[in-house]
Image (cartoon, rainbow, N blue to C red; front, top):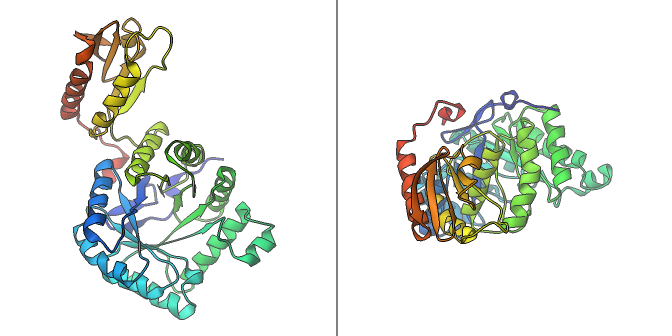
Length: 365
């Protein structure tokens, strides 16, 4: 079944539109101590440079809530407060500039506490994200549904939504997450069929850099290509910057948004006659600094390279101590192998400088 993103409601987190056909927003979470504003801001700035558009920070105590003021005053991104159990922390974070909250209204402390948090969110113009995680579902729902099923996730999330709706609040986004890809897929599809609140997508506890990225791509990629997801995070046991990099790779692969360099490169084979893997490894961190959506080819064979990668904006190929630099399939110059990296980076930087973005859905940002 196919869905359309414009069927969801539109909310705003700071200046970032979510839902209602807005571009899918990339989110991550800091792993610094929020009580250390300098360290947290440094990480937020690194995330922003990598293309992050929304950032979440943990609020474990009042000191962290009070640290939101210097953080939100200087943050280049809207900052979301991650709150558990204590409504005082939610109110304090909102008073100190939080653009949104992630809470569970079912465990925030009863009706009076929910009213207090909702009133603060209304006053601040801050949306609330609620959701369900297969690892922390209420016992009554688990018993009724026979375990952490997709139906159980939807029921739990809907209960949180109804609590907020009963207090006259509808600036809501919803997440339904499991560490199981199939459970997440089914739950998100069920939600999209029944309700129009925007969805935040994620595969929880996905794992390390490689395994987590693959697992997230399998689940989130399917949902994104089916038309679901208004914002998402690729959750990795890794530097949060790598989450953002992986997110942009996924958006580009799904044909939804483009940012940064896409590298196309040959798999190695017996015909490779130069250090292709070494060149790629040295090029990746340099090319990651470039935000223009260019295609760069790093090919293993001088004979086939320009032809197989003729769509690339810039590319190199090598063999037997020599190489070529090419653009759009046309050879620009021949080079010693030792000069390939420097010449490639210079050519990509020049192409990025000349890049002129076309008008597309990202223009809403």
